[in-house]
Amino acid sequence: MKKKPELPERSFKLTLEYDGAAFFGFQRQPGKRTVQSELEKALSKLFNRRTKIKAASGRTDTGVHAVHQVVHIRAVTVLPARRIQAGLNYYLPQEAAVREVTEVPSDFHARFSAKSKVYEYRIWNDPVRSPLRARHFLHVPRPLDVAAMKSAAKIFIGKHDFSAFCSTNSAVRDPVRRIHSFKIVKRGPEIILRVRANGFLYHMVRNLAGALIEAGYGRLKPEDLKRFLAARSRKNAFFNAPAHGLSLIDVTY
Amino acid sequence: MKKKPELPERSFKLTLEYDGAAFFGFQRQPGKRTVQSELEKALSKLFNRRTKIKAASGRTDTGVHAVHQVVHIRAVTVLPARRIQAGLNYYLPQEAAVREVTEVPSDFHARFSAKSKVYEYRIWNDPVRSPLRARHFLHVPRPLDVAAMKSAAKIFIGKHDFSAFCSTNSAVRDPVRRIHSFKIVKRGPEIILRVRANGFLYHMVRNLAGALIEAGYGRLKPEDLKRFLAARSRKNAFFNAPAHGLSLIDVTY
Image (tube, rainbow over all chains, first blue to last red; front, top):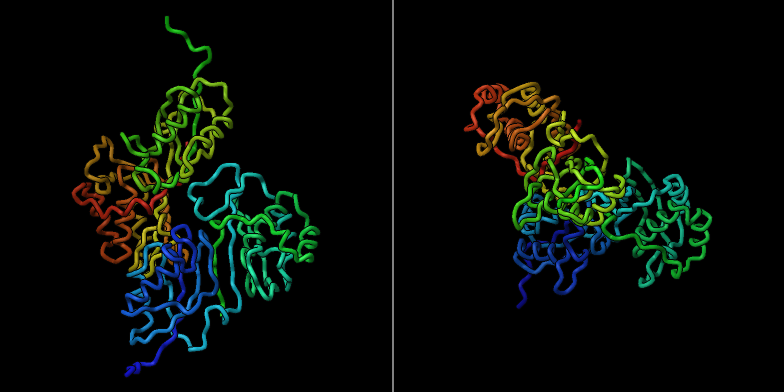
């Protein structure tokens, strides 16, 4: 006879920070150290039963960092949220941490409830590499025209079919996304691209960053980007800027 | 018969950046990967003859980072400074880079000509660790009283015998140093200690950082620090804050 659980299942929202260099991306993969597999190991130890995450706001690729990634779990437990956080941080490797745990209604979904996400792409624009930034910045030795990058970024703001900026091996039913803002900030040789959208296609931020770097070189004009965007062809897939410059910064609900 | 060099020896000042986590400190050590040994390997390859550095502004310990370390070399070469820089960056490992090369008069000395040096000690003061800051910040989970730290830091400003803040295994003839400024800046959970002095004793910044952390806990008052400073006893050596939070930021000449 199957025993009924004595306690109701509860839902929790977990906010994670991790160093992308230490994992083979977010998603579970057999035999690889991924954020999901390490988190599920920690959850299973803490709750003393096999526990999986229900969903993440999105999967980050190998090398992509997260300042603020969100997942949700369900668990039968009497532990308060802060004890769950402390327990997970005890079991997780040093390169990942649970920054916040909050109990949420059972209909909360880390991916489907997300209203917007923010990514940052970081560029070190200097002839000489910066060893202290090597893990989090793309080194671009040739000077970039930041004004040209800003003009080009404006093209992307608003609701568009971003098929041209999606890697070809992805199959998305709806390639339309709305970019709320696209800010470019220069602080000395650091150039930070900060984009907020209601969602992103596969490799979209890295393709957009690649296109803006081309714009910064003067090789692509805003008109070219407009044309590519309108063509919606994945064959035009852009220079996919390397993963290590990319960080997931925020998810809002 | 010994051949005379056809060209005069020239002196160069090299400014280096390196990630302390990648090296066993600055100073050459047999069989260890140090900044000095990697730089001397690169110099010897570039000049096609065994070339050593003449001096560094100071030696950084294992794990200590440098945004701006200065060394000087002498070499018989026709290469302009920027070609020397490019050549060294080609041969150096990715975790180190020569940020600047300038030709200097033959009496320039990286250590003895230095007027002041600036170090930063970085603290992540939050109950939860920050994986993205793990390599450059000391994680202090308990809340620190930054106002108390600022009051305590004022004690150190000026000319003092810093024997009490020097690790015991060092033998310095003159333990008097002048601290020009000691700034403490809090940005959210980040606390940055920034100290400028005409020089530092062995482990001095890490001992000062340790003392200020104790002050931030409320365990040491400014009067205690005054008393320790006056006692000049190395037996009082303080909590030596870990190396990875420390960065050499600037050297002025």
